[in-house]
Image 1 (cartoon, rainbow, N blue to C red):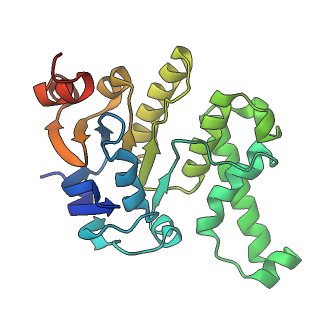
Image 2: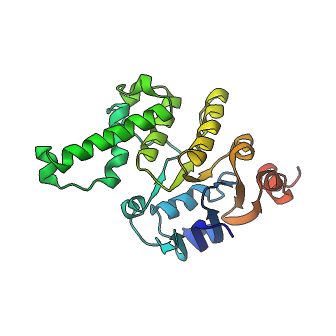
Image 3: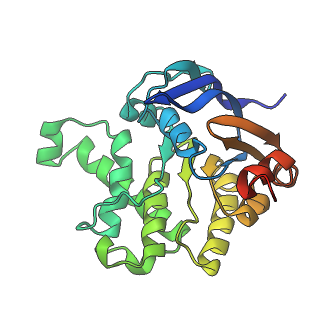
Length: 256
């Protein structure tokens, strides 16, 4: 049996009486790409928010590498090896691409305030390590031409890559991607598919993503879970799930 890096059991959360998630059980295998699909309002982003600590569910349990992370703060969860990107780009627009990526290293910071102010000893060595990591990620995602560009001046597709780069700079074991292809053109989406494969194969990072582009899902994912109105509709191999009658009904409606 393959090891599960993430285990979610009976996760439930309500907002104003609406069941955003209703007793969701889900396991993510280490070294896999697992997609969460479903129509708008299905609870997909809420699910990621619960895993990353932005929301605390009303009931259930979440474990990462066999240890409970339920109830931890987002920064505590990040320090354990979980990084994420957002549906709407969350970057510091007045900072450069390099500076934004360096922020991803903050969760691995191990020096004190005085040492950082004086910038000596461990702080200086740590900064060199972080900058080397940032350069490595910049090369990996091929955004060298924008390394010193202010984020607000970079094209939308590049900004999406910068957010991905910042997450990779955290050196996570589990990467949460919230609609990574949203707003990308066909060529950029194809590049994203290659990078997802490389992140899994070359960097050894497990990926859990929320995605609407079914072609991308089928091309890069090992397992797919479909949600609708906070409930699980189907789970299995990509082609099997996207062709499931209940999933088609949820996307297209009863009549279709």
